[in-house]
Each structure stands twice: as C-alpha cells, then as structure tokens.
Length: 412
Length: 106
Ligand SMILES: Cc1cc2nc3c(=O)[nH]c(=O)nc-3n(C[C@H](O)[C@H](O)[C@H](O)COP(=O)(O)OP(=O)(O)OC[C@H]3O[C@@H](n4cnc5c(N)ncnc54)[C@H](O)[C@@H]3O)c2cc1C
Ligand code: FES
Image 1 (cartoon, helix red, strand yellow):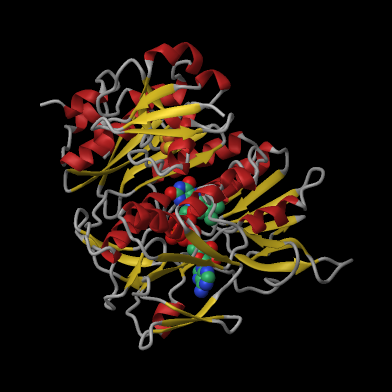
Image 2: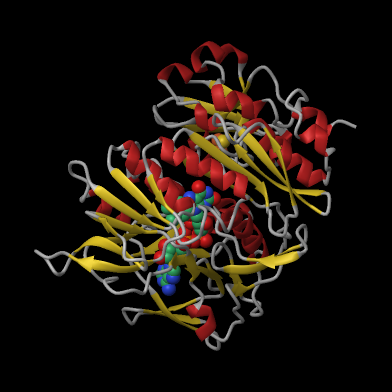
C-alpha cells in the first residue's frame, strides 16, 4: 500500500503546529509543508517587538528547530508557492509548474498586509511589516536618528512605534480614527495608550487621513514626506504602514470552496471538502462559546485551530471552542487580553488609566463578563481566563475594588 | 549538554538534551513533550508552560519574580516550586534536573 500524504500550505504558526499535532495524533503518512517564505516557521509576534528592537535575531525565533522536523519526518518545501488546487484529481500545482498529489490538504495560508492604495504607494521608503524580511529591510534603513512615520495606530503600528522609539528615532504615528486602537478597545484604554506613547516621546496624529507619499526632490523613486488630506506634511526617512490584513483565500476560492472574510470552516476546522481542512488567520470559523462566527488574527487561535484540523485529518475530531486571548508588548507595558469584547455595553475599571501604567478594563455585555484588557496585570488576566471558562461574572463593585483579591472572584 | 527530565501528569518520563541558553520550555517543544503548550512562544504572556521544579535545583534555577511571579499566583494549583518553564534558561548546573508538568495542562 502506498503511504498517505498530507500537504500543508503555509509554513507559519498554524502550519507548523498542525504538522506537529499530526505526529502527536499518530498520523503515519508523509507530511509536506509548503511555504513561500525562505525560513522554517518562525514566531511572528516578535517581529515588531524583540526583532525590530534588536533584542533577538531571526535564528532565535524559530518555532521549532530543524532537528525537530527531521526527527518527526516532516518535510518542507520552502520558498515555493502553491498556484492552484485541483480537487478532482487531488493535486496541487506550484507556481514553478511542479505538480504534487495529496490525500489530505490543510490550508494555513494566513493573511497578508492590506496595502494603502494612494499616490506614491509604490515608492521606495514605504514599508509594511509581516515577514522577517520586512523587518530586515526596515533595519537596513535605521542608521543614525531617523524620522519615521507610521501609518496606522493599531497594535502593530503602536508596537513598531515603541520599538523604534526605544532605538532613539523620531517617531510619528498617523491614525485616521480619532483614537488609537479604536477597533479593538474601549476609549479609556485608547486614551491610556495615547498618554504612554506621548510620554515616550512619540508624536501621535489622530483623526487624519494620509493622502500621498510624496516623492523626494533629489530622488523621485523614493518618498521622503507624507501628505495628509488636510494639507499637512510629515517628513519621513522611513514610512511603515500597518493598517490591517486580509485573509489569503484566493486558493480556496479558485478551488470552489466557500469563502466569506476567510475560508469557511466548521468547528472541526473542516471545509466542505472532506479531504481539506483550514486553520489560522485565513479562516472564518464558528465559536460555540461566543455564539458567533469570526475570523481572528492571533497565535493562540492559529494553534488551537491547527490542533482541531489535525484531529479531523486523523479522523478523531476535536471541537475548536476556546475563548480568544491576545497579548501586545509596548514600551514597558504588557497588555494581555482575555475574551472577545465585541458588542460590549459597559466597561468597569480596576485601577486608574489616567495615572501610572497598571489597570484593568473589564468588558460586560448585558451584565455578563465577556472580556478584559489587562495592562501590566498578569494576575487579573489569568483570573479572567478562568472566569470566562466558568462563566462567572463577579459583582461590579468587586471588580473595581482594588482591596479585593481577584482570586476571590473564583470562590463560591 | 544538560539533560532535563520531564514527568507528565500520569508519571510518564521523558528525557531531553537541552542546549545551554535555551529554556526548559524550548526543551519540551523541541522534543514534542506534551503538556507544555507555549502559546506565547516564551514571552511570559500565557502561563501554558507551567512546571514544578525539583526542589533540589531551586538554588540553581532561582525563583520567579516580577511578571512571572504574578502570573503564577493565578495558575491552577500553584506550589512553592512553580515556575514558567520559558523563564528558566538552562545552564550546565541543571544537568539531571526533573520538572513535573501539571495535570491541568493536558
Ligand atoms: C508584526 C506582527 C505582530 C504580531 N503580534 C501578535 C501578538 O502579539 N500576539 C498574537 O497572538 N498575534 C500576533 N500577531 C498575529 C500572528 O502573527 C498571526 O495571527 C499568526 O501569524 C497567524 O498564523 P497563520 O499560520 O495562520 O498565518 P501566517 O502567519 O500569515 O502564515 C501564513 C503563511 O502562508 C504563506 N502562504 C500563503 N499562501 C501561500 C501559497 N499559496 N503558497 C505557499 N505559501 C503560502 C504565507 O506567506 C505565510 O508565510 C502579529 C503579527 C504581526 C505581523
Ligand atoms: S510560553 Fe507563554 S508564558 Fe511561558
């Protein structure tokens, strides 16, 4: 009998974990991971943090070492791109023309940066941040003190700003909304982060649209200024755009699989094709705990879902139903987020976001605890994860009372 | 290369040679030792790498402080010898050390 082959498209958090989980769940066939990056899967979160700040090198960021994959007999085809999936004869076509057969297929294609489609977008000096090469390119342009403009005040924009400021550069963040992190946090938390970034010496420009990356007078192939729609100009030796990502769904779409803001999967990470699963940033999936479908961009989601996907391939389904969580490191701040605050109607604070650098914003929806943003509050973060799992909502006056040990919320 | 022994919730033992400078968490990941999930990749954000360190080795590993200590106050079943394994950087002196992985991580 010939051996079954599972092919994984995408060599990052989801793909790497899926491959490991397949072996853990006793998949005996071949495992081939195809990725268009030239590195073994590496941790992406440190790209805007430790890697950019020069505290770690890319070799220290591998998710697992090469020896692990050799021992587990996991094969990689790096620097290769899949161009097409043929579901009828169960083959893949690579961009270089090679054809590859699969028995089981996992789509871990992730997301790519959303590009700003404005005048000057193609000029040199305009950068994005998703792959380690992006960081290397940025780093080759950091000699001396630079004027750096970051477009977008989301997590990645703010982390990038903090890391570059730590290196001593002059950093300006331009955000179109009237507050940073508008899509993801309560106003109190946005105001806090604005204060902190300003205290670090970062210039924040809110409620302003970028209109054009203006070409330099002495080199028309390079941009050296950012022009906003109100006519204001910001000098920039380097521009970094961080305005979100789009899921890579084209392969699935072209293969006739359902997509809608992500590849459509069920709670077992299965697509409608019994031989194809999908996991990570590229999926639109249901979460029974949240009672909704969603697409998430986080490592814990990629890992949990990859585990379910591997289980489905091994025909021992494990339901994916985890409470989302996330973290972000900026300056000396560790933000840990438990739960999903979508639809919240009330915010209860513990500690004062107006002074210092430590507080919690609990999010409630119809008097039920649904999430918490914990700023330098690891204990409350850990407790909130447990509260969500047990569906406990402490009384509001206790949530806000600093004299009450949060561990008490779990007692009764 | 120091040898670290990992014991799972049901007493199963796994040994791993871990490079000096890597963490006890890395040792588990690199050798597919179950029970250490390391969702945050070692940046002290997730506490899915909680272990109990062999008491004899605590003088060598040191104890938790700061962020790690705070996280450990709220893990399942904290003990005096609880550590986040991503914060223990392996040295030659740790050769032969045993760490136990809590049941809640399975
Ligand atoms: C700078 C930065 C900071 C972040 N910080 C955090 C954080 O603090 N916490 C957190 O939880 N998350 C963070 N994230 C998000 C996190 O990195 C993602 O959620 C995670 O990488 C998703 O993993 P994935 O495997 O689903 O997709 P991806 O990491 O996007 O990987 C998909 C891979 O598939 C490849 N691919 C796609 N199509 C093809 C094809 N046709 N052929 C071959 N290869 C293909 C892609 O090139 C890519 O390498 C951060 C992301 C970035 C960029
Ligand atoms: S790996 Fe996340 S805290 Fe240790």
